[in-house]
Image (tube, rainbow, N blue to C red):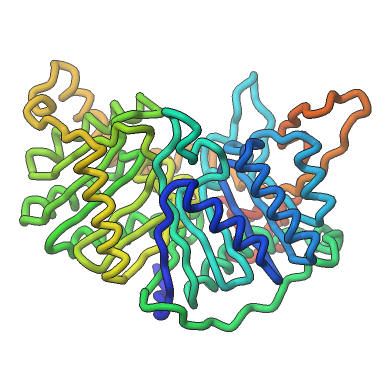
Amino acid sequence: MRTAWHEGNRVRLLENGEAFFPRVFEAIRAAKHEVLVETFILFEDAVGEGLRDALAQAGRAGVAVDLTVDGYGSPQFSPAFLAVLREAGVRMRVFDPRRPLLGLRTNLFRRLHRKIVVVDGERAFVGGINFSADHLADFGPQAKQDYSIEIEGPAVADIRRAGRALIDAAPRRWRRSAPAQGRRPPDPAPVARGPARVAFVTRDNTEHTDDIEHHYRLAIRAARRRIVIANAYFLPGYRLLKALRDAARRGVDVLLILQGHPDMPMVTAATRSLYRYLIPAGVRIVEYCRRPFHGKVALVDDGWATVGSSNLDPLSLWMNLEANVLVHDTAFTAGLHAHLERLAREECTPVDAAGWLQGGVFRPVFGVVLFHLLRHFPRLAGLLPAHAPRISEVRVSVPDDMPVGTPVPVFDVTADAAAPAEAARPETRELAGGKRRRA
């Protein structure tokens, strides 16, 4: 694994949709050459329509616009929604659209879970915020707490390169049919914007199977003063768990901010079974109870931080396509630390160590079983079908008798555009239909 670090970046933490959506929409509307958007979830609500309108405005102005959504996270759209994008020249694609089997969706694993926006190769956004209204406070009690990071500077080139790698391996016949404004703009020259040293890391099922987890472990093992991890779904592998426990035992202040108002109760129950392993070593755990926690951020000491899409659970660490930004910058880390400390102090409930260490008769047994499952999960995950997800272009034809506003499943509005193995570039083979590798 080789990670490219870039000096001279300006970074900004964006909390929740209130900060994220206006910045993204403003950047898209101001685009001059190119907009790349990847998202796990795009819903046809006020936020999704806002993104659609911003992309359409850019497309009508001659900007090359590419939008890619996940076939599981974004399962359907109305023809009217899609028509606005298509008429503006926006090229929309779906990652791994699949028909249900006996009413059940089959694209459960190896999802496109990344959330990336790149504008003109100069500004990028990476994080955990999807394009849906449940990332806004006025959504109600189920509104999510989440984060993204805005980057300007040389590191944006790597983010853009990853976005283009996802879509550039499509068949030539598909690229010839793209509108005129879809021609690929030249790579912008890197320009220093700020003091931050930044690296962009991804997880895929070919060449970067454990890069994100590896960087977490490196930072945890090097910690001397403090570790703060705020993560929505916390079921990491054995080595990461052991690194956290070892850090606490050597005197590092280790704080975990986890879900206390879960949107997936079964996952939270599994996470809580790990408390018996971590608390005796001195790991502090608090649960965020104001609303569902969806963030994926962490910091170590005074100079290392990460913001991204990757949870610390089996799906993110060993199956999904994920993207995180690593930051070496004391000012950014200090600001993130101040925010997380306030969050832990004012909006979280400390875990009662005595209560969790006693527990009932089944809790210790469940914890032991889960713990050993996590130790061997990567090997077990390799037994799951390692299909090569395809990327399909959205092409919708509306029957004359279809009622206005009827949602159409993505597998019915897409035409297969997967590249053959010999046409895919090495770094995009798993994404574009190349050779199959186990996760």
